[in-house]
Length: 515
Image (cartoon, rainbow, N blue to C red; front, side, top):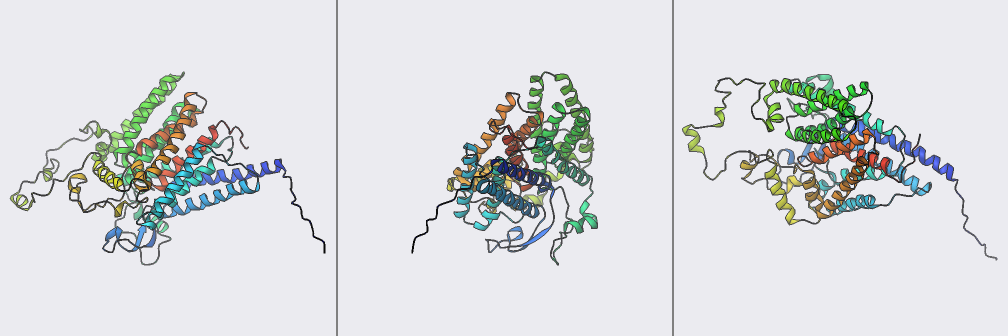
């Protein structure tokens, strides 16, 4: 019986057909990005899940039982869907359409960060939390790996000619929706009191679980600090577009949008966003004087300053804290509010002198006050002590609740109340170091610096469009506010994904675009 010789058949692929297929896939991926950028920051809804606490004696938000999340669950679901879908499409391009993945320092840094995230989970004491994050934040390794996947995919597709304009359009919904909610809340109007709105947001809640009585919706992000910091990023982007881009009509629209973001900063009652915007405005002024056509930009900037000054006065008159958390950082006296000689206004409650108070005071307890940065320096100093114990691989992201010395009596002199639960470091970079260790921080900083230096070089050479300049300055605002704030799904996905898209568009090796 003779042997049958079988030779391997090599089929020559049609390069034009492959190229057309790649372009079609790139369009699908790009629209997936647009969906993520537009919807994830504003997607909210109540969801109750069974949370198994690692602490037997846990109470409140650290106890085992059905716990309610309003801000991050559905954001995470959409993030996972889009990241998995786009990754599958990228792998299809690589394995079936002969696409060559771009391998450079940035790609290796992104992969290294994924490795650091994985190792942090493997060696974490609380692995499930390190993987998924706390039930009310979902800021664990899975979320960050999803970010990195989207960033790698974004670096490996081509973009339509009007991609930059579409990126800008995705930002409008978040700004206007949150300005509306924040201003209503500042004036005492809680939209959750509307039965139809409440039913919409509790559509997926199981029977027997309801929102807490008196629950207040302050925006589409978890907390005021995030609203303030992220709104500063938005205000920076749209102020830059107002000054350097578009027709008079588009400048008016962008000016009003920048103002809306500024109003959200004020209504958020948080200093981080205001300080960030002030820093970025100083940088914008420097850029104006580096441009040839200074007059028009100066006029538009003047209009913005006038409008923001008027807005600050109106809102500060409504709520004293608006002034305290904005211009009050520099000027203590609020000129928009007249001091009246009442006992309540003189705040004698802060100077208790009764005999009963003296008898009850324990000499071993420190006085109640906030350390610098609204208690941040107290938190940072304790987180640094924790980092010293596990500096290489960290504790796992979002696990600070269970490692921070919650019973420290010095909380009284750090964050005023010893009963306050510390669940985050209030600093993006410190949070990465705590969660993933030195290995993770180095790779993360390398990612940020690669993006920054590349786009800075582009801006200095004046090759980038005003939209690229706007997103670059928005990126700078994100990096600055990150000194005071943590990451959160709705406020982190946009800067990381948009900067990856901008990087890909400006990459010298990516001249080709799809129509």
